[in-house]
Amino acid sequence: MKRSILLFILFFTLFSCQQDEQPKISFYYWKTIFKLSSDEKKTLKNNQVTTIYIRYFDIDLESKTQQPIPKSPIHFEEKATDIRVVPVIYLKNKVLLKSQLNTEDLVTKTLSYINQINVKNQITTDEIQIDCDWTLTSKDQFLNFIEEIKKQSGKKISATIRLHQIKHYKQTGIPNVDQAVLMYYNMGKIAPDSLNSIYDKKVADNYLKSIEHYPMKLNLALPIYSWAIHIHHNKVIGLISKMDVQDLKKDSNFVQENDNFFKVKNSVYKAGNFLEKNDVLKIETISKSDLLEMANDINDHIQQNPHEIIFYDLDEFNTKHYEKDIFKQVISRF
Image 1 (cartoon, rainbow, N blue to C red):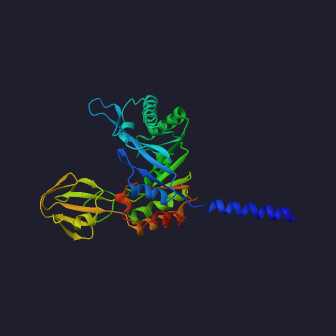
Image 2: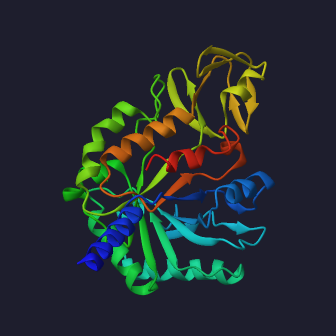
Image 3: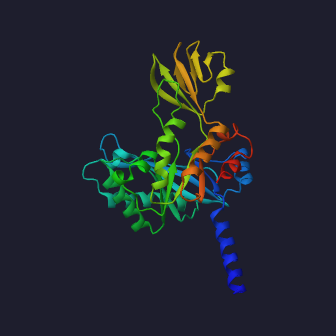
């Protein structure tokens, strides 16, 4: 009897520890050239990162032939050593909407190109992640693509899941993947108003309840990036990545109108973009309090602790805006 009680206590303790295990910290790498700076390497080391999700290439339609082709492939200027690499393929939705799409052939060519990159750079991979904002009209093609890539690759397959696909999963379908990753950003419309399109708690709150009912365990992807929305005559004409408030405050060509809006005083080129006098740049970013708020809210609604939280994206421009231990603070909320 005593032995049975001891075994029960041991089992319960082990089970509790397993349930309370904190997520691992991982990162997306979303540049076309793989070369880590010293600060980026420190970020990986300080957070005991074992996996990095590298965007290998996009799949888009060639403008003339309208045939699927790989675009903007990754080029490794240094080897990705001592870390597990997961290739991420950004599959554009319009590819899936192409009439008479040969999914089997597309998957074969996709895997061949991934393999070419791996062989050239002496990388061994055991997982492939597909990033695609599929819709109701492309649902069948996307689900078929996932089935086919699982079949042909023999590898673990993961996929990003947007909030609308979580909320309306009965309509949009659930991909037959080994792991789903909830993309908890890009929530709003890119617009000249005062709202933050990267993260808006009011928008997020409309989806939180749905997370409780999604019939698959979820890992998380959280944002740590910022950008400037270029506004001309109150119309959005583009996005300028990796720009922040401090950068514009130091530039005499801009005047700050409020917390995150800057007016162009003199026509100027900035980060390779021509900005006309009186144009406006709206800075959107994610604060420490935003990240902790996201973690708290998701933790209140997710069925099981995520195994992994992937931060988008690894770049010293992004990480310099946060305290050294911010990523550990986030995972500690689970």
